[in-house]
Image (tube, rainbow, N blue to C red; front, side):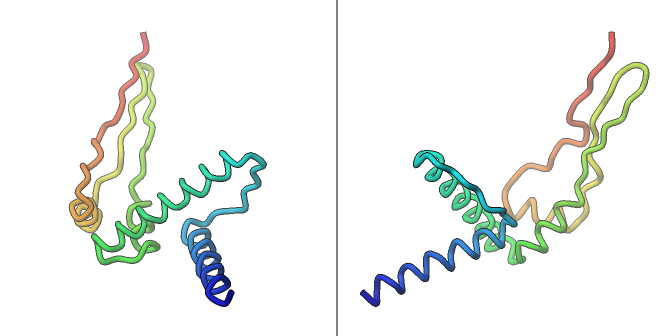
Length: 114
């Protein structure tokens, strides 16, 4: 019985950590399928966070703060719109390289007006 309570405490601590790391608010689902999906998605998000921390050697708050500085701007004129990201810093390049992902394109989309 004691082992059961110990395992329950470990699970509850895991969920508390998950929700605080991801800054989640309470979700109320009535259907079992939705509850399972919600838990699975949160678990996958936490797994990605932990992998990013391990590969970069940085904490999640530092990674998030650094990568949140990449902004996509929309620029409009009479001829149309285009979307361009900010310059990637050296630190952001290090993180992207450590994670093995591609650098986002400088200009992501161009919408010309007819």
